[in-house]
Amino acid sequence: MRAPLTSMTLRASEDGELNPLVPHPIEIVLSLVVFAILFYLARKFVIPAFEAAYTERTRTIRGGLEAAETRQAAADAKLADLDRQLDEASYETARIREEAREQSAAIVAEMREQAAAESVRIVEHGRAQVEAERQQAVTSLRAEVGTLATSLAGRIVVESLENDDLQRRVVDRFLADLEGGPAGQN
Amino acid sequence: MNVAAVVRSADGFTPPGPADFDLPAIGGGSTMDFLGQEAVLGVTKPMLQIVLAAILVFAFFKVASAKRAMVPGKLQFVGEEAYGFVRNSLGREIIGSHDFQKYTPYLFALFFFILLNNLFASIPLLQFPTFSRSGMVYSLALLSWVVYNVAGIRKHGFVGYFKLQSVPAGIGGPMLILLVPLEFMSNILVRPVTLALRLFANMFAGHLLLILFALGGEYLVTEMAIQYAPVGVIAWLLFIAVAFLEILIQFLQAYVFVLLNAMYISGAIADEH
Image 1 (tube, rainbow over the protein chains, first blue to last red):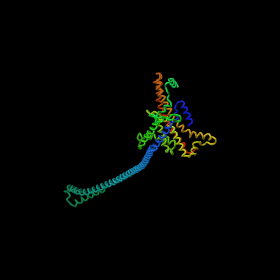
Image 2: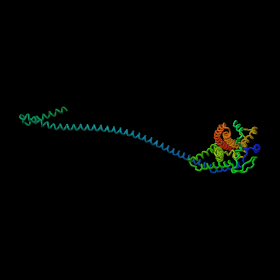
Image 3: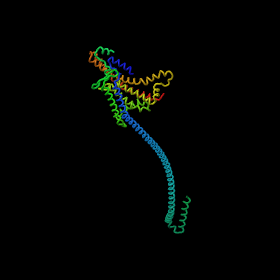
């Protein structure tokens, strides 16, 4: 490389012009030294700082993602659990409602039966009472009717019939007729 | 071509040339002879710039990386994005996730060092591309050559590495006589030269173009007849357009330089075919 450069340089010198390809020796060294220093400083201070920041950020983000995933899984499990509980609860309510409906139907039927029995009993009771009262009325009426009839008949036949014997016979016959009539009708 | 003819006929305009890149030492200094050419002995502007670039790159990333907050602020975010760009798209994507960590500091420092030095060409008051000085580039190209060759030799051994770089896979017989020298040339000898020339020539030519548009426009407007003034204004408008194009090229050249570094390293430490 040196040979063509030198010849070019010579030609350039003859023209009295500078050849820009011919380097300045100080500049070669300077550029190398300055770059070497920059490289050293960058490697020592800049690169580790950036890499550390990268690594730390990656770790933080990865940690955050993992934590979020764990939390998400826990939340999913919880949600499934709650869903299951809700299903159970709704099944339970349906069952209870069904049971209540059956129970109420049973209660209604039972009450209806009781009411019917009670009404029959009341009717029976009423009928017996009526019969007893009727019997009592018949008995008292029989006594009253005898007395009334006797006094009435006495007043009618007081003059003609003084005899107690006759009087008693007439009464007994009347009573026998009275008793026989309604007894025959019954 | 017409512009050039007009310029020459005016006979007062000196077009910009390599001399515009040979800045004098600040505060004066002597010269020495190097390879038949005078070299300034003293501190020049590009020398200050290259130191300034290193300081700025380190200071910015030191401050940006100092906080290490979980949720980055603006500065930390920009720093991390910039670092991540080199680390991931140049390092991990090309060298591979297994080995790239070892080369990340080198690629990172190289990219931002070159990028800032290139951008100096478009930063007001500085406005000089450090890497239009060929010497500045040669050392970086030489360093790249050493880095990828050393990486390969460490991985495969001396013989294994040169076999990997010079003997193409799946080819045998007399073709090898032709291909081995070619492969050796292109993989070992030519790479540092192309690396250096690509960066240097782009920076040199871009800056030269800007000087030409600026000075040419100025000359057309101020020194020549009034009818040439509009052409000078057009030259200035073009100057602005080219200046933006230059910013793109400055970024691209830094990117390409580091991309090729990563690819060379990746090729050197690749498993044998």
